[in-house]
Image (tube, rainbow over all chains, first blue to last red; front, side, top):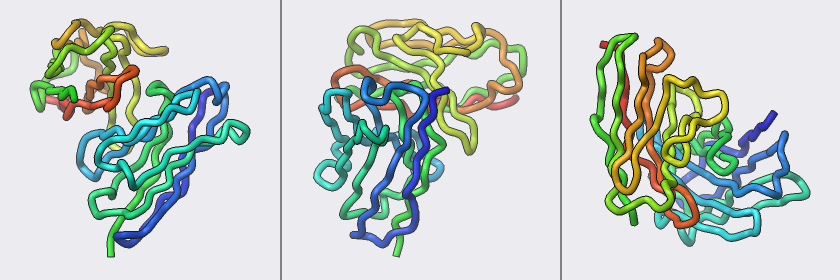
Length: 112
Length: 109
């Protein structure tokens, strides 16, 4: 069974940093592109970042230069390093295999 | 960047009725890399349709997708109680950003 499980969310002050992790199982992790998608409270879905199986990386303009996506195929894990966090980064962050299997999300709250 | 517009914003229907949801793109979506998702409160999105018209694994056949270019439609032939939710379209593929539409809420009339 395909599973992706996010962790690492929490409360952080504006300007702070946080690192999200996504543990994958049930599929050949190295063969798939992986994505981070977020959803602010009461709002719609926003694509954040993608990393392909070959390591090609893309970011949404709203996070470019502040967030870094990475993967460790040996550990079947995806990461999102978030720096210079802003109030508007408050959201549930979802990890998704391609876009066909999604985790349950981890909540990031940026507030003083 | 491609912008996706969904209509209507809210669709009020009764169980058993047919639902027709629209997604319009500001530019042509290449190779029909258009997906539809269902999201219920407190849950992650679930992939329903990919490639504009292919049902994802385990999705009932009352869900169907159609369209090409800039105009796409999600149809639910007969609404079941569990189908009342928010539906999003998304442009994906090899050219980011992988934009989502604002969503259509299907609620019980």
